[in-house]
Structure formats: C-alpha cells, structure tokens
Amino acid sequence: MCDGMSAFRGLLLLLLLSGFVAFHELEALKITRLSVPRWIENGTLESVTLDCEYSLTDKDNRLVVKWFFNDDPKPIYQWIPELGSRLVSEKLQGRIDMNFSVTPSSKFTEFRNLRILKPTSQLSGKYSCHVASFNGIDTAEGEMTVYAPAKLLRFNYTKTKSDRAKFSCEVGHVYPVPDISVYKISPGESEPTIITDGVAKVSDQDDSYRVLVTYEVKDSELKPDGATRFECLILFPGTDYKRYSSITYYPGGAARTVANVQYFGDQSPSGSQSISTYLGMIFLNVALVFGGTNRFENHVMPCN
Ligand SMILES: *[C@@H]1O[C@H](CO)[C@@H](O)[C@H](O)[C@H]1NC(C)=O
Ligand SMILES: *[C@@H]1O[C@H](CO)[C@@H](O)[C@H](O)[C@H]1NC(C)=O
Ligand SMILES: *[C@@H]1O[C@H](CO)[C@@H](O)[C@H](O)[C@H]1NC(C)=O
Image (tube, rainbow, N blue to C red; front, side):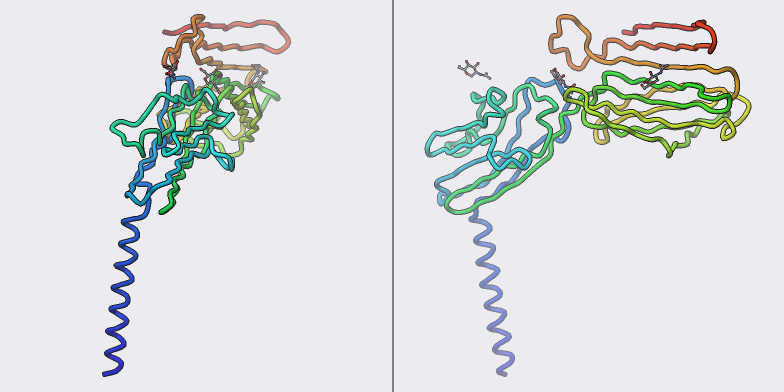
C-alpha cells in the first residue's frame, strides 16, 4: 500500500518535471534553422547569405546576435537590436553587405544574417551563430568551403631507365586540397585499377595549393603487349567538380618524356565576372628522343 503510494507520487513528480522541462523548452530562445551553404565556387557569386533563424518570446529582451568565424573568440559580426548597433570585425570590413535585411522581418530579426560580398576561398571555414537574450542562449554552426577549381593539371611521365618510368600528376592553384587519385587501365581491359603507392606532396601557392603526386611504374608489372592507360583524377567530394587527364604508355622502347598539360580558367582580358568560364584548354603532347632534340609531336588545340 505504502509502496504503491510512493510509486504514484514518484510518477506524479516525473510528470510534473517533464511538463516543466517541456514548458521551458518551448519558452527558451532557440535557433530553429541555420543556413550555411556547404560548397560554393570561388569568384562566381556576387554574395552569399548565411542565415540564422530563431524563435523568440516577449521575454527575450536584450537580444544579441553574433556570428563567429572558425575559432576566433571575437565575433565577425554583432547586432544588438535594442541599441540599433551593428559591428563588423576588421577582418570582414567591407566584405559584409550592411544594407541587406531579412524580409519579412521584425525589429528582432531584421539584421540577423550575414551577407558576404564576393566570397573567396579565404572565407572558407566554420561559421557559428550565437543568439542570446535575458531569457536564454543558443548556438549553431556550419561549415562553408569556397572552392577554387584547379588552374593547371599536368600529367606526364619520364622514362628514367629502359624498364621503368616516373609519373607525375600536378594540380596547380586549387583550393582546398582536392581528392586526387591515379589509375591504371591495362590493355584490353576497361576497369581501372587504383595505384596506391603514389606519393603526394602539398605546397602553398598564393592563397591556394599545389599538389604533386608521383609514382614509378616498372615495365615488368605491365602487360607486355599493348598500351596501358594511366589516369589522374581530381575532384571535390560533395560537388560536381571533377577533372582528369590520361596518358598512354607502352612498355620498353626508347627513353622519352610524354606530357599532357591542361590549363583552366578565365583568361579573358576584361576579367568581368564571367561565371567560372572555362575558356581555354591546351593539350600539349611532347615526345622527346633522348640524345637528340627531335620534338616530333606538339599539338596546341585551344577549345571553345
Ligand atoms: C578566387 O577568386 C578571386 C576573385 O575572382 C581571385 O582573385 C582569387 O585568385 C581566387 N582564388 C583562388 C584560390 O583561385
Ligand atoms: C549600401 O547603401 C549605401 C547608401 O545607400 C551605398 O552607398 C552602398 O553602396 C550600399 N552597399 C551595398 C553593398 O549595396
Ligand atoms: C612533369 O611534371 C612535373 C610536375 O608537374 C614537372 O616538374 C616536370 O617538369 C614535368 N616534366 C616534363 C618533361 O614536362
């Protein structure tokens, strides 16, 4: 009897408590949606808008909205509606559109978002929205990467000895470091085999990266008759961005170098904001015979 009673009391208390918690959750200041685009292409957008939606009650006075970038403890943007005060960090001075406001909006939502003008790769990183009032506090964060397509893809090999060759695949002026894979397709086959013993080296190149993958191929590992095709593929997972280069290799034969070079990018002199146009692609196939200066193939084919 007594046990039953205390169990009943316990249940009642639990019900009361959960009701209290639910009530509080309903009332507390809360971020309901954070919108930070995961991937955007460098140099293609006039602006990108990061938004942070929250639910408020009339208890939420002294509202402060802040945006943070990466692990910088100082906000890049801060808005206090009741004071009509908006601050942009030095780092983003001139990069934020201060005229832009949320529509429809209220006095407490108008300037909650961050509109970044002409987003570039340096603005890749973690963005956190931080909303606080006298009544509550909430935070949310999202990652944005402003990727820059490679400006160069150079794939070549040099026959270093009569029975082996050294391959290099170089990607230039790219951000961030892309996924880069090298494959081999044996004569008469269509399925590529991934080459796993390539060595990748990453170096800084202005505000971007240069990535060089090298590997050695021994003729004894290849099918002796016919051409083996080698491929180098770069991509950013999560985007449609993908580029590749391929080269044909015959075992044996004379010492030689074969190169396939592609340049990408906007080379228009006016430099206007053409949307990542891919204006020129130059193929260069060079075969050199050691001991001579006989360059017997050299095509330049500008496309588009
Ligand atoms: C990004 O775009 C800007 C403006 O178009 C350009 O100046 C910059 O070099 C680009 N960054 C990279 C990493 O390609
Ligand atoms: C914001 O408005 C001011 C004054 O109207 C104007 O000078 C400025 O260019 C505008 N900025 C943007 C990014 O539109
Ligand atoms: C082959 O590519 C590597 C890396 O891009 C480069 O350093 C080298 O000069 C190239 N060799 C030839 C002959 O094109």
